[in-house]
Image 1: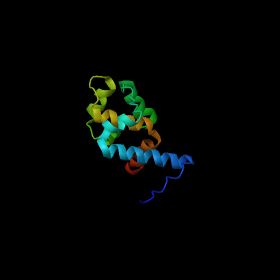
Image 2 (image 1 turned 60 degrees about the vertical axis):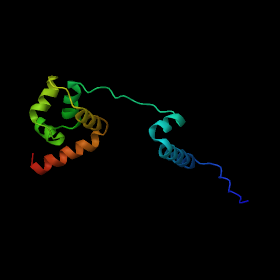
Image 3 (image 1 turned 30 degrees about the vertical axis):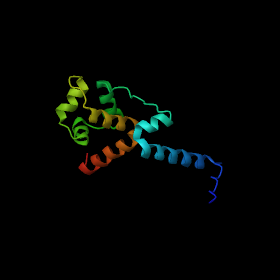
Image 4 (image 1 turned 180 degrees about the vertical axis):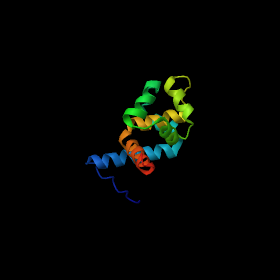
Length: 122
């Protein structure tokens, strides 16, 4: 009979995190998200929808971008940005995700805007 090595006790926070990630990985490999939800508490967080005022605030106050530059960053026509800001067009799911990224990581995106603006000589 072969003796199996007992698992060492988890002592540090880092060890506990690694152990939890290994358990999560094993659960996912076993049965996907369904198995993960059986073994772990899963909390889904719904971000609040982005309002026309949010679009303006993100563009102007957070990023300091013109409508044209903002549209260029998002890969949409300027008219689409105007429509979002007026509330006459609903953001696509992808645009909403991108604006949430800009909302929560504003410093990074502000640096991107400043870099583009500097290249253009504005």
